[in-house]
Length: 220
Image 1 (tube, rainbow, N blue to C red):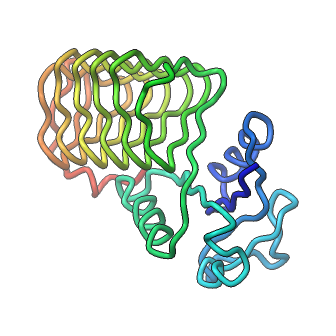
Image 2: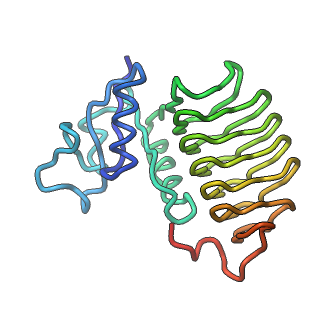
């Protein structure tokens, strides 16, 4: 059994604790956040909360793993920064893949990924590090999802697509086959994308059109 510390104290961390406890062989032993976000009682979900700045002395990296399934804040770059910091401190990161997701055994999936129930991940797909797939998405065959990406729910990614790093796909977004989403693309709720997208751009509508705003300027 792998002992795990979860980074965060909000909904994503609470849900990660639930899923790991109910549907994995992992043992969640504690939570961690930066010292300036510590709760007064230093407890969350019945587990101790420790400052991230002191974590090595309390939970050494050769004995514990980290998991940081954080929100897509700043186009997933906050989650990336925590993942990178943990790696630099010598920690290994787990991934969680729901037993109720359809995933073939030879599908490459990176670390620090959260893949929830009812995702269908077809053959010949590749999923990078630090990826969140919320419930009920379709990931088409021969597609690649790069690092630091968030899918919300009921997204359809057709076959032979490439989702660049730092992308965010809103609820019910649809991506036509063979599309390449540029780095940092934000596909809005219900958008239907039929052409390659430009980096760090926002697309909305059916058919989706590029908005006159950069994706990092959108609050997620």
